[in-house]
Amino acid sequence: MNAQHAHINPPARPPRRQTAVDLLLATNALQEAIHKLTEPTPSYVNNVYLEIPGLYAQLWQAMSTYRNEAASSTARSRPPVLIEGLEVKRRLDIFIDSLPCGCAGTTYNQLAALASRAWEVEDIRQIQWITRKLGRFAEDIERLINQYHVKEITVPCPACGVEYVERLDGGNNIVYSYALQASAEYGCTCQNCGYHWAPNQLMELATDANLPAPQGVTR
Image (cartoon, rainbow, N blue to C red; front, side, top):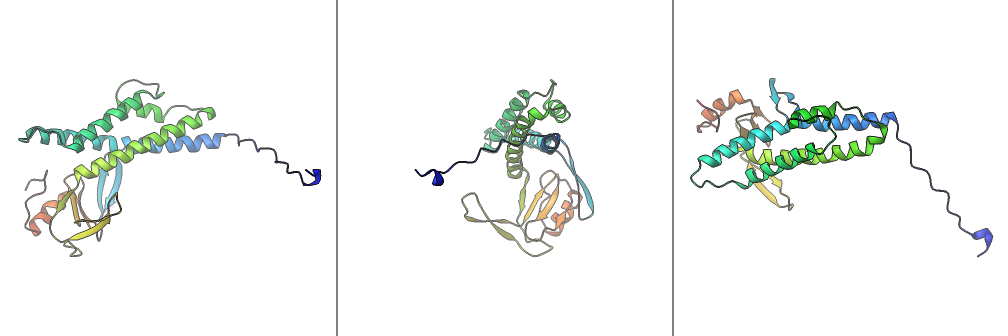
């Protein structure tokens, strides 16, 4: 080959060296992932203050309630969502036990210690890996909580008049559900117009719609 036309590959660029800024970004992301699991989230809906528990607490509460409901049923069988929820909690607890938290005790204590742990720049890849794993656990918990907590109210929304909404399921098929989705813990929200009834307004909604009291709410 003519030397004038020989192709010479440029020297490979060395990987960028991680810095203290990269460490700060990584630890902030880790702390956010931990707080999503453990810390309550304050929120205002229709000028009503709500404090939503962290995802780990929500999972524990949902599974405890579901276990009691299953034990009181005549079938004495465990619903699939309960089995999956307990499995997710078991895997999360095992994963937290395997991390360099520097603390023994409950999952809450270990996560708190992990959030306040002093890291080095050399730890960035490990921090990012832990953050991704915790994010996947959070997604699993949110999916299970949505399956358990949400109850459909089978009347049109008083605010917009819509009774059904459509959405795509996991197979990209159109499915229909009632617009009003309620829980005793967080109230009721219309999936069409977004209007929200706080927990202390659920009885008012049930009375106006001539419905029995929502589960977990007494007249």
